Image 1: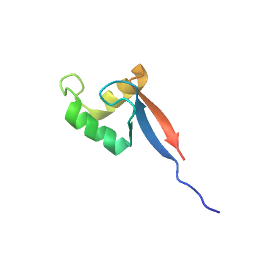
Image 2: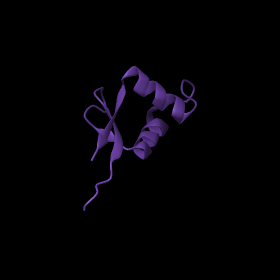
Image 3: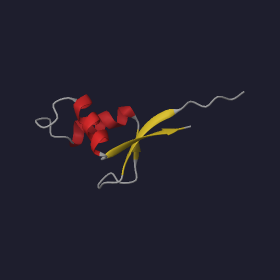
Image 4: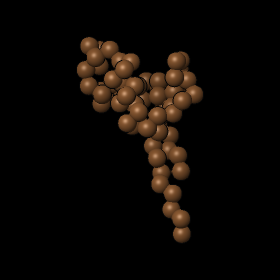
Length: 62
C-alpha cells in the first residue's frame, strides 16, 4: 500500500505573496526577509498572529 505523507503548508490571499504556498521552513524564510523584528521579535509569535488574524491559513496537502 502506498502511503502519501501529509504536508502542512501555509497560504495567503494577500499581496505580494497571494496564491503561493509555503512549508514551515519557507515561512521562516518569509519571516527573516519580510518581517519587522521590532514588531515581531520571534518567528513563533509572528506565525501565530498571522494565522490568528487570517493573513495566512494552514492547509494540509496529501
